[in-house]
Structures are given as C-alpha cells and as structure tokens.
Image (cartoon, rainbow, N blue to C red; front, side, top):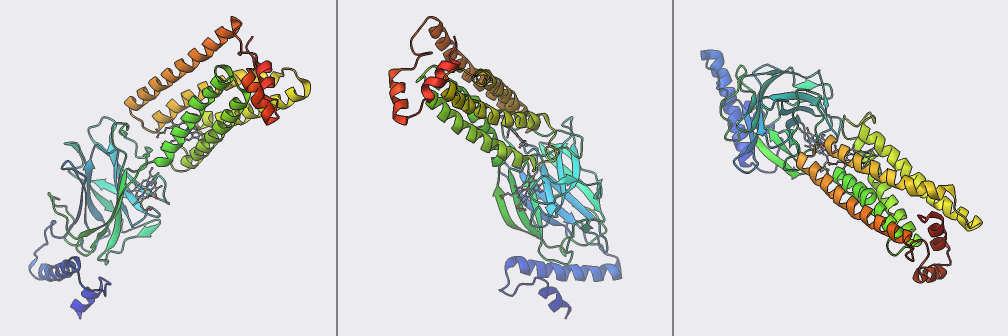
Length: 438
Ligand code: HEM
Ligand code: HEM
C-alpha cells in the first residue's frame, strides 16, 4: 500500500519514463533510510537528499540551482550560481513570474561579493524586494572565478505571501533567469537589495522532485556537477525588445528625421510639402516610440513612479512635438488667409531645434539609465555628433547661399510650384516666404 501510494504521486498514467523510475527508487530509498535513521541513527548524506539543476550556458559555464529541505522543516537550503558575465542570476518558485518567490543575486558595488535580493513578483515585470522573505547566507556565498554563488537558507519559505510549494510533489515547477550580458551592457554592481534589474536575456522552467530534495538535517553538498531529482522543462532566449524599439525609433524620428525635414525645406528640394509630409510621418513614429516608453515605464520599479529625469524630459518632448506640429499647421492656415508671415512660423522654426537638442540629451540619459555600457554611450555620442555636423553643415551652407542671393532658398523652384499646382495646395509658397532666413 505504501509503495502504491508513493507510485501514485507522480500523477502520471501514460506509461513510466526513466525520470519516474528514478523518482520511485529514490522514494523507496528515502523511506528506507528514514526508517533506518530512526532505528540505528544513520543520517542520509546532503548529496543524496539534494535536488540539483544544471543548465549549460556554453564556455564551461553553468547555471546551477540546488535544493535541500531538512526533514520536518519549512526551511529551504539552497545553492544558486551562474556566470558573472550576466548582470544578475535568479531563481523563482513556480512556472511563471506571477506570484513567484524569487532570489536574485548580482555583484556588490566593489565587484568582490554578491548582493542577495529576495523578491516577490506580481507578473511579467520587475520583481520587487520583499523583507518578508528571510534568507540567511551560508559559507561559500561570494563572487569568485567569474562566478556568482549564493549558499543560503530561506527560513520558513515553503509558503510566502502569495503562494506555497508542494513539498510532496514529484514535479514542483521552479523557474530561473539570467540578466543581460554582452559588450553593450554595463553590469549591475550594487550593495542595495532594491537595485533595479534589467529584463532577462534568458529564462526557463524546470521541475524539482521535492521528495528527492527532502531529508537530512539541513546541509548542502560541496559539488553540483551532475543534475539529480530535476527535469528541464523550457528554456528561452529573451531580450528587452520594447526598450530597443523605443530607443531606436525615438532616436531615428527625432534626431535623424526631424533635421532631415529641415534639409527638405532649406537644402533640397526646398519643398514645404515634403517638409510637411516628413515632419508628420516622423512625429507619428516619435509618438509611437514614446508611447512604448510609457509601457516600458510600467515594467521597472525605477520608472513606476514616473519621476525620473528621462521620463520628465521625454514627456516634455512628447508635448513639444504635438505643439510643434500644431504650430506649423496653424501657421499654414493663417498664411492662406493673410498671405503674410505669422509669429507661429518663427517660433516653429527655432523651437524645432530646441526639441532635437533635448532629445539628443535625453537619449544619452536613457542609455545610462538602462545600464548601457560606456562603449555603447560613446558610440551613440559619436554618431549623434557626426549626424549633427552633417546637418548643421548643410543648413549653414544653404543659409550662406541665400545671403549671397542664390536662387531657390527663399524663392520656390518652378518644379515645386508645378507640384503644388497639381496638388491644388499653396503649401509650397506660403511656408517658404514666411519662414525664409533673410
Ligand atoms: C526587470 C526584471 C524583469 C522583467 C521586466 C521581466 C519581464 C518579463 C516579461 C515581459 C516576460 C514575458 C516574456 C515573453 O513573452 O517571452 C517574462 C517572462 C518570464 N520571466 Fe521575467 N522579468 C523580469 C525578471 C525575472 C526574474 C528575476 C525571473 C526569475 C528569477 C523571471 C522569470 C521569468 C520566467 C520564468 C518567464 C516565463 C514565464 C512567464 O511568462 O511568467 N523574470 N518576464
Ligand atoms: C525624446 C524622447 C526620448 C528618447 C530619445 C528616448 C530614448 C531612450 C533611450 C536611448 C533609452 C535607452 C534604451 C536602452 O539602452 O535599452 C531609453 C530608455 C527608456 N525610456 Fe526613453 N526616450 C524618450 C522618451 C521617453 C518617454 C516619454 C518615456 C516614458 C515616459 C520613456 C521611458 C523610458 C524607459 C522606462 C526606459 C528604460 C528602459 C530600460 O531600462 O530598459 N522614454 N529611452
């Protein structure tokens, strides 16, 4: 009856696989050893009663999680380790982020130790540090040989505010994740348990035979080379793609396409119509990218209070783009009625450059805020400097040409006039006359 009961726990009726046989044998051994330990005082070794999960990450580096629950205890003895080339390493209960109890580890500020941050997750966004999870750090915790290691005891952790572990389960799901890595990333280094972490570059789910992990009086083995009592479920490479789309689209629209609109008006083909089309399209791209910025803001503890410099400047820029477009449009309507320059046209002309300058600064602030590496920020600065030099050079050249009385800067070319006649619109002439640099 006892054996039947143990066999039934796998909950599987579709044939027996290797993992289940091992699980079954382990339980027989586990029960046997418990009986022995009552009668002759033999304790099972830490290695036998520990579930170990290894995930190879290439270059001889592993993600490792190991778990032991002492007999009759609610404490979790755990080992968590992973390469320090990832910004952080983490483990969590359950197959999803939602309601998961997580342990996240990252380098300390001096790069010589690890900071261990127990967190609770409410869904697919940054888990929040929680003082309700009590972790005691044990020997072996630290950062050495490019590996972050945590040996710890999570006290009374079989249940937490938003969930619990099934310690009888042969396949209790756990999840793991690794922070960003690579040359474009600045590694997180902080002594604060509430430090903001970036979205994972890898995550996965594995199952733990909790019965295999139970036994002994609480200790961890010294070696974790072979997986035991665990089974890999899923593994996924990930990236913070909304952040990439937000950054690339905002920079292309505001730092590249907006000045390009000034070239269309002043250098070639000196067309108000093309200026208007370009600025309208780039405003739409900018607005979509900034709306993605609003979504991103809901993902991180650092941005959920909406008070950071990057967000405030970004929101000012968003409003400025709308005002800038409206001023151009209003100027055009007024010009149609009065055939003369308006003050909106003049403000529109200079305000545009202020918006572009603010956006350049805000892009740099955003990168630093998202832990971009110094190399990536230098690359951004060089690119912006080159693009700005080309645009300023072209506009300066066109302005000089107009001062020397070159045709076309403040007079519409025949080609453009015929274009505008075809459209039945007077856009070309009005903007040009009203805003020409004289
Ligand atoms: C800033 C921190 C984090 C953010 C913004 C974040 C965000 C997300 C997002 C957007 C997804 C869905 C991805 C997809 O559809 O492919 C996801 C999935 C997942 N994340 Fe995170 N995550 C963070 C931290 C963590 C941590 C610390 C862990 C574990 C230790 C973790 C484990 C997982 C797992 C297992 C999934 C797949 C299951 C699920 O969708 O819930 N995440 N995360
Ligand atoms: C001109 C306006 C803006 C520009 C040029 C801009 C550009 C950037 C850049 C370059 C990054 C770095 C991305 C990375 O390194 O992965 C970033 C990050 C971010 N931006 Fe913006 N942004 C602007 C406006 C906004 C606005 C209006 C918001 C929301 C109110 C916002 C929210 C964010 C957030 C939350 C991040 C952090 C993402 C992370 O940590 O992964 N941004 N932005």
